[in-house]
Length: 151
Image (tube, rainbow, N blue to C red):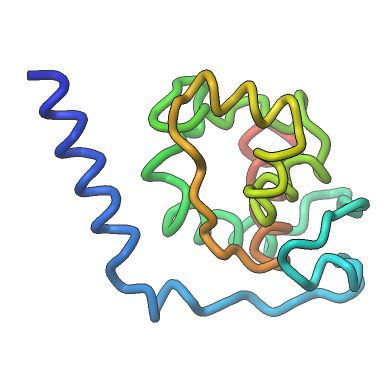
């Protein structure tokens, strides 16, 4: 019974992710003072992410919206694993560059990064490319930092 429930849940998550793509394709405005030009193109490794202090609340809001649309079906905000690992404490364990690359360059990370490969072995599900734009990824970082208790 558990196996059937999991399959139904995954099917529902897949259908939810595929529906309403036009609405979810809307992107947040890019803040060029925060994003480097190299971050503007998918497939290019992000080498530096500038963090704001205090948290940029507009970015936190963007991150919350992206999480709700693209991430929440697989990731919880706690340590509990759903399909993918829980996000609690992620900004304490991983650099913002690593997180950003995992979000925007998942294929590259799964091919080259040992930690990403360990996560794949643990979760047994390859993270799909959600086509998250650089500004959205930056918002997700701020949202994750807020989730981890930063002010």
